[in-house]
Length: 193
Image 1 (tube, helix red, strand yellow):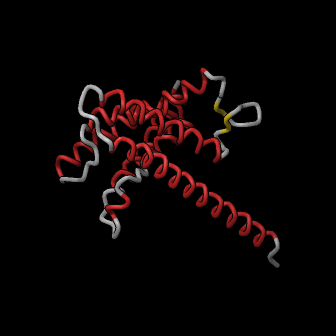
Image 2 (cartoon, rainbow, N blue to C red):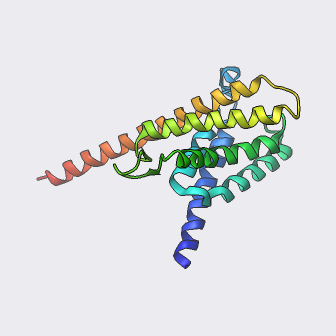
């Protein structure tokens, strides 16, 4: 029982820290910021969080959005969304909804050849990112019928996929480089005189 609780706390802490870090890094002023405004990097953390830790990290994403909203109101940080709370709910819900739909279509997510979607395969993660971006677009289009239609929803959905894919590919490259240097370091240590 205590092990499950510690696992819950650790997974939520990892996701919350990484999610808030990426959210705050996205608010730095860049040279060509007007071109980067539609590339939403935190979407990759949302996808990776749900794929690797499951639905137990929903608390981290809810808390992350609440903390970000507080920072947004206190320090006048940019918010790219018209309706922050509805958009936050869609960000929190789109990946679990996508995973639920994939499970209903018999696409189980796991590790190994017995699963159709391997969560250690970057192509499968990018496919989940694409489907989650489409789910986010569908959720936004459904709510836009109640409010005014916003053509930026299409750009947000594309930006979710591009930003999520870029952060996932970057993390994959970092892990590859670290593992390469680890292998080289072990090789050097084994063959010292």
